Image 1 (spheres, helix red, strand yellow):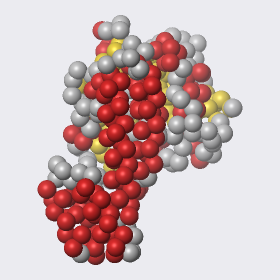
Image 2 (image 1 turned 90 degrees about the vertical axis):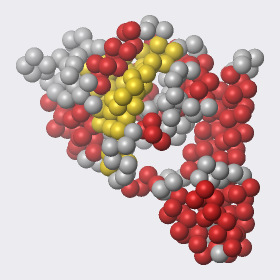
Image 3 (image 1 turned 180 degrees about the vertical axis):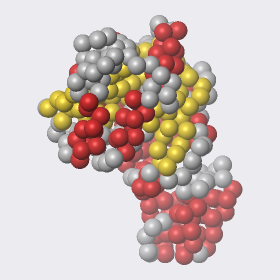
Image 4 (image 1 turned 135 degrees about the vertical axis):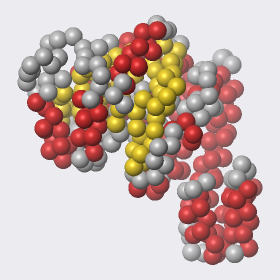
Length: 327
């Protein structure tokens, strides 16, 4: 594992000077977008930060991070590709600040991110981590809030996080001691790895603080809509099942069990949506029937009407798939 860092110049905070927070940035297949992430770190109102970029086996990262290494606060870890969980854990092992923040390589921080996140944790010694809202930008949803699509209904309790009534935005800041207490990210998880960490922190007794306004900007990329939703749901189910086992004997175990049932249903719904792409009319008709039976579109009359139409005319399926992205 190689490490590159800049040289100390002027009045910047160098490697041997005290810093309060390390921003961990895994960068795999994000291209030049990582430069925007780093520019947002450089623009922080507080100067007492460090940043560690992990290339996770992507040789192109060096090209885009290289110009930033003149700042001694920024380091690049060159590693083999082992997935986002291992990449973050490697950076955590290199960090020595009391607070550690996580930033995806294609997102950006608001200028006061470090200030407000540290302040929120300092206000509550029981809080092991803090999250906030975010504003979308990029391919679609420009200017809209993360919380408009992913509710953040206070209080931010373990029960509400399990039920998805409070959704934790990924660009969170965590106390180093809290991370150490649960062992960091779980290796092997490539999706829902952050959800898994948040649950384990809450189960361990750490509280979650919240900044009720955008602290970062969340990029929507054109390829986001084509992600394997069924695969992501299966990982979320495995994470929730692990939480259910960890909560045995506690009241929240009932909530975790209910979520396991809900996620199992959502996996079947996602699989049925995938079947709508088939050319076979009977398979498409059966998929629409299955979606209606499982409650798809229960909160969207337009979607339910379209599913009924597909049962009568399977040729309408492509229109449904386009409509689904807007509902």
